[in-house]
Image (tube, rainbow, N blue to C red):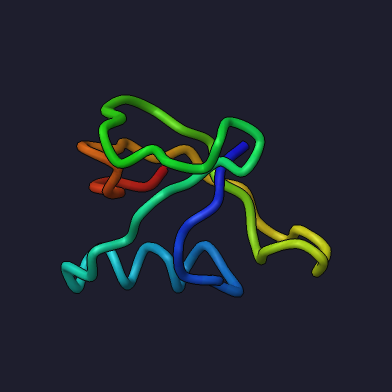
Length: 70
């Protein structure tokens, strides 16, 4: 699972940011964090630890930036 650089409280807020062309980066603390060159599909969760995760999403990523959320 990966996280976004912005601590979204809901998947709806994430989708709204993507629709507004906000640059949302992804990172994975378990894999060294840096996914700036990654292109593909990731699975996101939020809000960030230590809060309980309340949402999960599948996202299309291009060069470390979220482009589409399912």
